[in-house]
Structure formats: C-alpha cells, structure tokens
Length: 158
Image 1: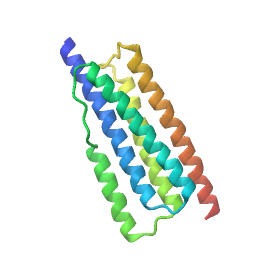
Image 2: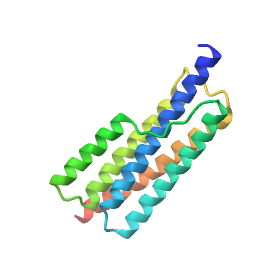
Image 3: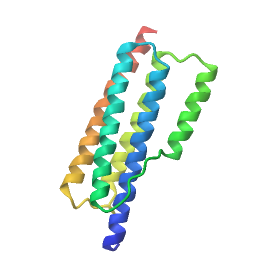
Image 4: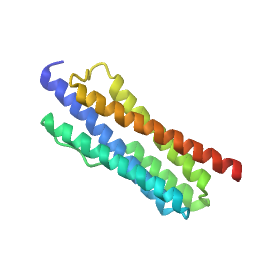
C-alpha cells in the first residue's frame, strides 16, 4: 500500500469512527427524549458530550492528514434507530429497555474502535492518534460498564 493509499485508509477509518460517535449521539438523544428519570438524562447527556468531544478530536486529526471529516451516521446506526423507533411505537419504554438499547450501542462503538486499532493495514505510525483512539476506547468501556450496571439495577427492581 502506497503512502497516499495508507493516508486515505486512515482517513476512512477515522471517518467511520466519527460516524459511530454520531450514531452514539443520536442514540442517546433518542433515549433522553423517552426518559423521565432526571439522573439518567444527566448521564446520557454526559455521553453525548463525550462523543461530541471525540468527534472534534477525530476531525482535528483528519484535517492534519489532509482529509475532510464526515458529518454523517452509519447505515447500521440508522437501521438500529429505526428499529428502536418502531419498537417504541408498540411497547412502553421502561428504563431497563432503554438502558439495554444503550448498552447495545456501546458494544457497537467499542467494536468499531477495536477494529480500527487492530487493523493491520492502518499501522498508526503517529503515536498521538493511537493514544487518542485508545483513550476513546477506554472511555467507551467505562461508559459500557456503567450502562450495564445501571441496566442490571433496573432489572432487579422491576
């Protein structure tokens, strides 16, 4: 793979992570709309801010590579959100099911970051981007574990 192809591959991978973060923002915004629990809303708004911060950092690095950042979402994210909307139309959304949906979204985000970090063709030569992606992944792991713990708490209560 030539240098230009390598850079384009990196830009593509980073844009995929932007899309995943945009999916995450959209998912948490939908979850906030369906919630009455103020403490969960506050947690979800924190994760929205986390993803927006990640997008800003990814945008900056794409610009350094000479690329153009995306502002879209993934097709799978659109399908998942449509499924959630359809499910919501037929069933009451309780905190447990909202948190279950959020946990699924966190799993998808973690997998996308893991894929980018493990991609043998990417070979992140700049330690800053590798550290950046690892930090994002660690934040997603913490968020996932917190959402899962909250979900399990609501399962026990209901």
